[in-house]
Amino acid sequence: MTKIMETGWNLENSYASLPTSLFTRTNPTPVSSPELIVLNEQLAASLGLNAEFLESEAGVAVLAGNEIPEGATPLSQAYAGHQFGNFTMLGDGRAVLLGEQIIPEGKRVDIQLKGPGRTPYSRGGDGRAALGPMLREYIISEAMHGLGIPTSRSLAVVKTGDPVYRENVLPGAVLTRVAASHIRVGTFQYVAKWRTIEELQALVDYTIRRHYPDIEDDENRSLSLLKQVISRQAELISKWQLVGFIHGVMNTDNMTISGESIDYGPCAFMDSYDLETVFSSIDVHGRYAYGNQPYIAAWNLARLAESLLPLLDDDPEKAVELAQAEISEFHKIYNSHWINGMRGKLGLFNAEAEDEALIEELLELMKKHHADYTNTFRALTFETKEDSVLFGTSEFEQWHRRWLARLDRQQESNDSSKKLMQDSNPAVIPRNHRVEEALKAAVEKGDYSVMERLLEVLSHPYAHTDEQAEYATVPKECGPYQTFCGT
Image (cartoon, rainbow, N blue to C red; front, side, top):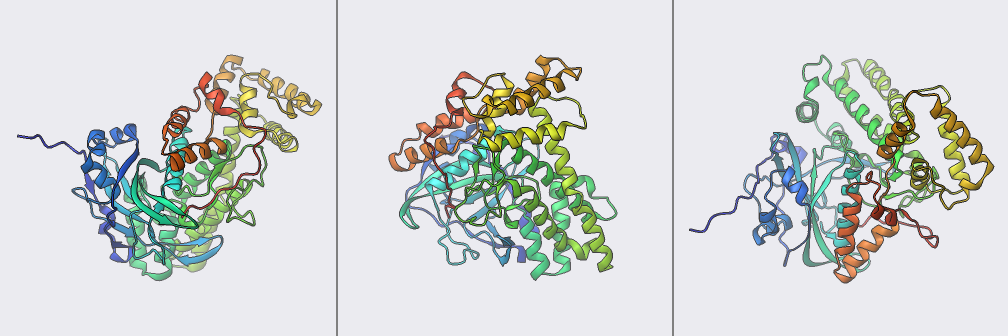
C-alpha cells in the first residue's frame, strides 16, 4: 500500500462562529498552472506543517487555492476603514481566510491566501495579485520578523501561470500569509457603523478570547481591550521608528488589533535620516511620512475608541471621557518605548535627564548632513567612521565627546555597552536597491537566487557578519526611490 503523506494541517475557523454579517463564505478561484516559487520551511515547521507535503503537487494546489485543505472554512472578511482620512466600506477584496491553524504549542494563527481571485468585497477588482508585490511582501515581512518586530509572516508564494492585468501584463501569484489574526481597527469600524450593538459586543468578546484572555474577567472589558490595543500599537510603532521602517499606507484597515505589522504594500526602509521621508507614490501629501507614523497610529486608535463608545459606558459623555483618557496615554507609552530603544542603540543601560537631548541632537545632525540612519548607529557600535560628511564635522566631534562621557557615567562596562548596541542596531535592513534587485531578477529572469541570498542575510540582522557588510552599503548613485501599492 502507498502511504498517505501527513500534511500537518490542523485547521479550524472560529471566526466563522461570529455573526455572518462579518464575513462571506468564499472559495478561492483555481489557477491554471501553479508553481511553487518560495517556501518558508522554518515557518512551516513551527506551524506543524509538513514542508515535504507543501512542496508536492497536492501541497502546491492548496497554496494556490486550487484545493481546500481538510478543516478549512474559506471566507473573506468584511471591514471598513479610513483610507488617507476618507471613510469607506472595504473587505477582503483579494484575500481568502482558509482558517486557523492550531500550532503544536496550542495557539491558533490565521492562514490566508492573498491573490486567490474575486470576493464579494472586490469592488470591481479582479482579486488577483502580481508576482513582484507578493515577493516584496515575503521579503519585507520576513525581514521584520528577523528584526524582532511583531508581524504577519509569509509561508509561501506560488506563481499561478495566469496573467494579471495592471498598467502592464504581469505574472500572477498567490501569497500564503500567516497572522495572529486579521481583525483590524476597520473591522470594528464596520460593525459600529452598519451593524448592531449585539454584533459589536460579539466581536469584542471574540477578540478578547482570541488575543487578550487575561482581561476576560475585567469589569469593563471593552475599555480594557482598548487599553491593550493602544499599548501594543504604541510599542509596535516605536519598533518601526527605531529601525527606520515606513509602512506607507497606515489606513485604519491596515492596523491590527493583535499589534502585528500587516499589509506590506508600498513600504520601505529609510536610508538618510529625515522625518519627512515618504516612498509611497500615492502618499502625495506625506500623510504617512516616517515622522508622522506615531501621530497617525494615535489617530487610528481614536477611530477604534469611537467604534467602542456604545460599549464603554451607557452615558455617552462618560464613554467619551473614558476613551479620551486612554487615547491620551498613547504618546506616553510610545515615547517610553522609543527613548528606551534609543538608549539601547547608544549603549545606555540607565536613564538620565539629558538623554533625550543627546538623542535628538544626534538625529538633528544626521538630518543636517544626510547621514544614513542604519549605518550611523552601526558605525557608533563598532567605533568606526562612516564615509560621510557627518563624521568629519566639529559638531559631531562635540556630540561624540558628550556621548562617551555619558557612557562613562554608567556602571556597566564598555564591552557590555557594545553588546547592547550590537543587539539594538541591525547590521542590515532590506535596502531598497537590494529589494528591487531581487524582484527584478525574479520577475524578469526567473532567477530566485538573488532573493534567496537576500533573505538569508536578512534572517539574522543582528549577527554583524562579514557577509552582511556587503548588504549594508548604499550606492552613491542611488537617486530618489518610489514604491507602488502593487494592487
